[in-house]
Amino acid sequence: MSKQITRENLINCMVEESLINTNIAEQWIGASRPTRNDLRQLMENIQRKQDEKGIINQMSYSSFCEYHINKAYSNYLWSHTLLMSAMVRPFDSNSWAMVTTSYTKKEQTELFNDLLKDIKANNYDDSRYYELILFAKKSISLGYLWQLIRFEELCEHAWGYYTPKNYAYITDLLFQGSNNEIFKESYIRMLEDSKSNFKSTEENDDLLMKKSINNQRYIDLQDSLPFYRLDKINWQIKRDKQYDAFASQFCKYEGIKQMKFNTLKKYCFNSLKKAAKIGLNKKNKKS
Image (cartoon, rainbow, N blue to C red):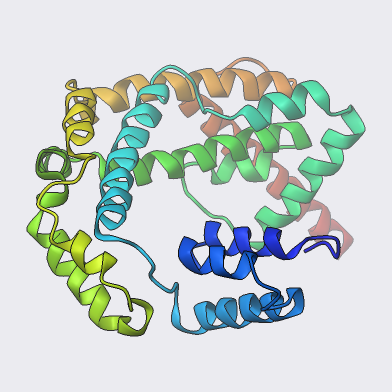
């Protein structure tokens, strides 16, 4: 933090981070103590305890529900959007467009050379792309390939969320809102694990609420969930076309003839095999 930060700035920061409530903040702002140094020390102590014991829970029951419901909804929506985009482009990355349009050729080369070192250091050996990783002679080709690899990992992760069972769970969760019994049980356990952090009755009163003011919004979110669900087999057929689109661009970067993805893999494998054979023959001649 900057040395110029005021006591009030520090206090407001602690409120925003849910380290103290607004009543305490109002009392401290109007007084001379704790001093600015006291506040800093207090924040450091709380943050150290958070590191040691996990986040100190200051959630009311309604905010507890809000957090978990929004997280489930956004994860599912993210998965749907990501998988939809995977059918129309090899990968989704603003960073790639920024690198290829804003970076100089020298900066691109330095960036992708560092990437090559990272890949070799991590011994990346996914069989789907191993030939291409070893074959790529230009740093931009490797960078382009790495974007595809990272995107594929995201797609695999997204399919973990994107299941009929999870869809049914999320719609039910949105319909019940804060009346969900599992939420109440989980929240009570959280209270029992951190009793010292709940000294007011405000949280307990909130726990007794039968319906959150957000419950109608949860119903609206349920209506906004994508009704159309992707079929993984049909998705993969369309995804295969994106591999071919990727291969075409990869070939342009490498300066070789245009090929589809599977043909490119075979070409890379045969090229590497040929290069290894030539290298072995040279070594035998020397010996």
